[in-house]
Length: 69
Image (cartoon, rainbow, N blue to C red; front, side):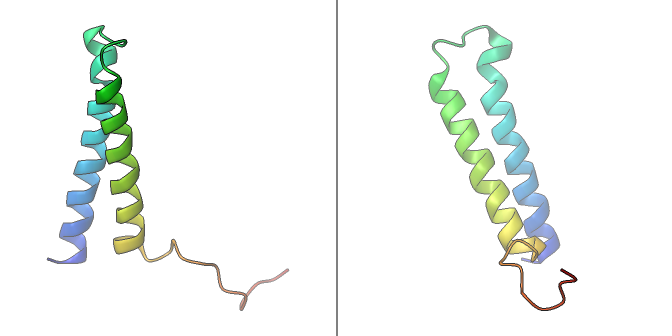
């Protein structure tokens, strides 16, 4: 699997987590939808972090060399 395909797949899963998180709000069942909100938030955070670390390459530690200050 290429980095581009992995990035697209993780982006789709990240936005799917947002939709799952907002599903109880749109259906009007916020009090019974806490499980949906937890699953959606968890999926969004995990997929967002995986997307950052696996495909972006700029989420690591900032090196000390090359700073102007």
